[in-house]
Length: 343
Image (cartoon, rainbow, N blue to C red; front, side, top):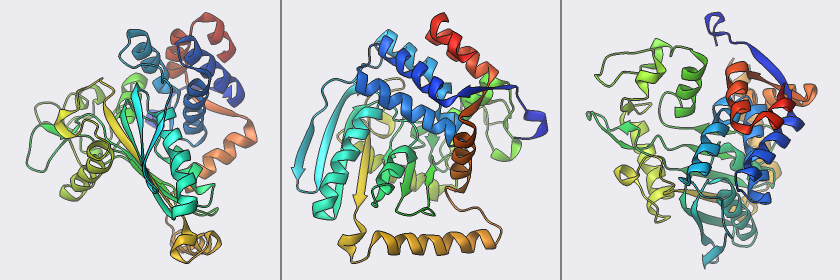
């Protein structure tokens, strides 16, 4: 963020923020486990310095729950297909709890089979993909987690969006393990909505266009246009790969069949145990550390460095900085009682 893009923020204690979100989701009809999981994921995004996937989203979620567009998660069951493959039916809920259930199942199966894959069917968005990959890494496993989205991206040469930007994350054991998390557009949809709310322009070098194909720095105009995949055909191909894994294999809607605002996309969790491949978590961690140090010595940033630094700052202070417009939107959504705790 440049000096011209500075916004006024307010510190909010992490514990208070988590309690307010948990209470708001319970009041909206989520069960205890689901409300706690969604709140934890959103606060985790804030502490990791990823506000695009944090409390910015709460008003949207509460509106969708109130309208019935997205349902609270019901009783989630894991259907084991083979010793290494399972599925979870999300039933039209937000993807947070169904994907967390899938993750726990994948971790358990990978402990005995070495590799496990669990697909999630029929959900809305699941938040920051790295939230799940990091949890697997904490258990000394390598993980790849992804989700398909509504059509946002046009194929090279096309002028209409047919596929999602389809976020994918991966991580593994060790303090220097890479924590990669990206959607395959210049920036996530959350970043465009965040900038629209804060009145911030899009940097011209991001390459966004409006619905008429003209370059634009207006996030509201950019959201109305089909976006290009980062890296052209390569990025679009990776988005299609995620569509295959998360959408097609989970028997969810995929590609142009995904309807905006309908909880019908999928997700997939792939967990791999290093021991099954003849190595150990310690050796994997050491190799990651060597790679990370080489990148830093060369003046680069290793995947996960920024998030880990943000987490250390949040832990030291016990609070996160949230832009005032985001707090105001959150306060309006949760109501005057809970909002008073955010002041």
